[in-house]
Amino acid sequence: MKYVSLVALALLICSCGDDPIPKPKAFLRLEYPNPVYEKVNSPLPFTFEKNKIAAPIDSIKIAGDLKGIDVKYPSLKATIYLTYKSVTEDNLESLLRDAQNLTQKHTIKADEISSVVFENKDANVFGMLYDIGGDAASQSQFYATDSTRHFLSGSLYFYAKPNYDSIYPAAEYLKKDIRHLMESIRWKN
Image (cartoon, rainbow, N blue to C red; front, side, top):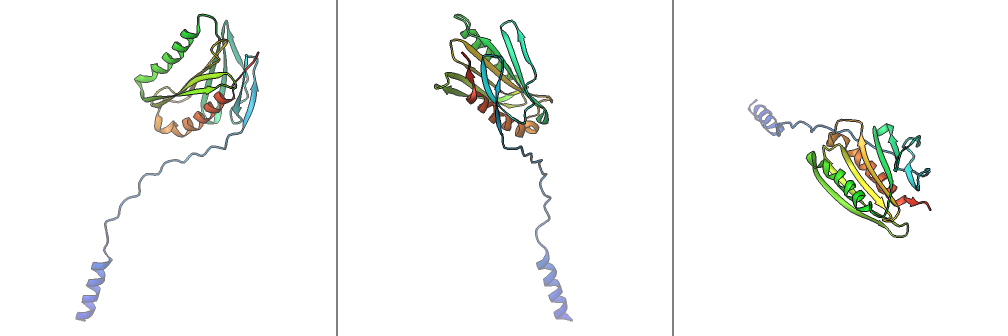
């Protein structure tokens, strides 16, 4: 009996391990389809390629020299707003300054703003892509120009209160689309 009690006590002591640790909270894993791009031949003086998950381009906004296209992503609740202006002898500097200032307005809520120079000499497209981190209203901004006739700016906005953690996967997916859009710009005439 003494041996049975010792064996039972030894088993009881050996069977006790570390205290149980709760599992960490799980995060929603969002997966998006691999992008398939199609050419958009707009009545504006440029063409570009958009992801097929974006809605068809249904309207072109024209108000004087200001022209725009909205590339809508209903499933992601986001839109890339494209704005086109003609470059004249004296407005390129102000167009560049306006595009840069629009991005800088997000510094109030942004954790960081990084920029990447874009250059496609073969297509005569030069610009800048801004990546905005944090709870800013827009997660990406860009501009592209040929420096003599054409100027295109773009902004990514979500139809939701900015919460960087929640929109991060969609923002990263759409940043790739924006890069592709910039790479595929071709000026007409």
